[in-house]
Picture 1 (cartoon, rainbow, N blue to C red):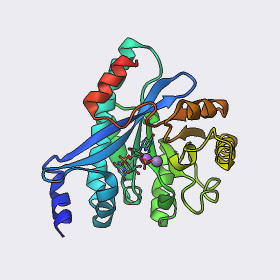
Picture 2 (tube, protein in one colour):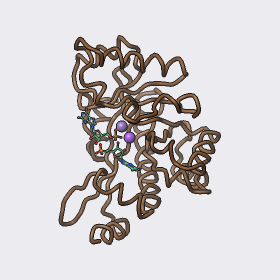
Picture 3 (cartoon, rainbow, N blue to C red):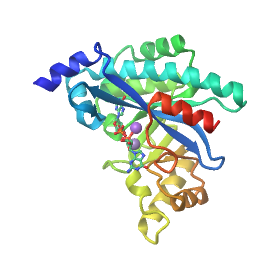
Picture 4 (cartoon, rainbow, N blue to C red):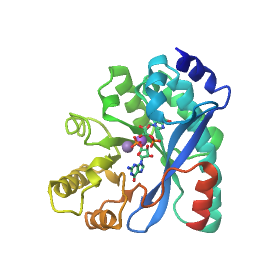
Length: 258
Ligand code: G
Ligand code: G
Ligand code: NA
Ligand code: MN
């Protein structure tokens, strides 16, 4: 298949690029970190989004080298941006969220891989959060073993797109997750009268009672922001703050919003 052949060559041809979407502390209104989001700049087709090639990358195992590249690239960027911020303001270091697929947790040397990249880039393991989806938690035992290993190594774990799977509640007590990201489909209608608002409040309370921080995804309006603040949601991500940006635009945003 043509796409697969091209995907195999895309790493060596340096066709991947990492975009960054800010994660904002809602109380302070400040950027606390970024989620790294990969794109494929295809020479003929233009920008290809992860939904179009991550499934193929997972099937073929290419997600492992691609994922390692994303982690390395994003850590290198973060190191530069942390220095930038440390000089200008003496607040907490910026954090980095990176998405992992099941196959990446599944490797017997997952800790070594992450440790090597963190050491090379001088990023503290406290500043890295790995995002996983519910489907990853339903993968095989070796995947779960990898997740536990990363956790015992003190890497933060974040559950992505929370609420969209079909067993969301059952794993919350079984896995040592630090952060819960509420899927953007739940954020859309909050503030308006209706059940959605109650569900978001309940998810936030549940997460807090289990000792997790909460990120609201897909925050697009001031009204949603105000409601989330009232609910004591710690963090937000979405077009209200910024769409995902390339490294250059991200740096400009950081400089204007230190
Ligand atoms: O960039 P976009 O907002 O379209 O990203 C959609 C989804 O693609 C993300 O929520 C995430 O689940 C997935 N994704 C983005 N970058 C990566 C990556 O580097 N690795 C993996 N495994 N998934 C990613
Ligand atoms: O799958 P994951 O949730 O990690 O990826 C986030 C995806 O959601 C990205 O594709 C990003 O472009 C998109 N996104 C980010 N913020 C918003 C938003 O405020 N509204 C909408 N509709 N999409 C968003
Ligand atoms: Na994600
Ligand atoms: Mn998400």
